[in-house]
Length: 220
Image (cartoon, rainbow, N blue to C red; front, side, top):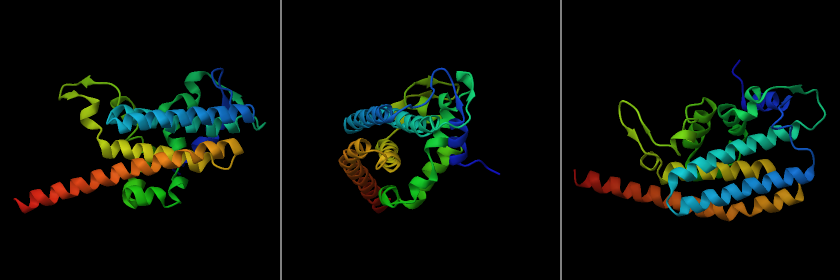
């Protein structure tokens, strides 16, 4: 049986390591959510400045921090917990955090489908769940030179991919934390305006691409 996102979430909740024992109370929970909101703000600033690659990196960081809050909150529920080394803690493993965060339950609503298209939204989640997109974390930040070519992040990550990452990050953030505490709901409400503006940028970019493609076809 293929493991689903909720299996990875439960696995991560059953262990602790010295560097992350979980979230112990309401104040810590709210503080962690505020931290993620600040990352959303920063990712949006980079996106609006057309620094698309580093915006992707921050969006992926948001995915990972959401995973840490989800499973970290569960670590304080009083269940039997196993002490492990940091290297064995799923919440210090990037691919595992992506599998926890990119849960198909966030596709139940229609906001991402309306923004990205149903097929693309499903593909996006699937490629993080399989690990195919997990390399984006490094590729969006670091240049590299392999035998075949030079990799420069800004040449790989465009407005579409950057917008998709930020929209998914905001949707996950709002869906996961709104309603858990009054403070969390207030914080989540502030991200709706960001979502709308990023969605407008994506729609405009896709429309312009379509117009350019039509123009090339007409002049072929």
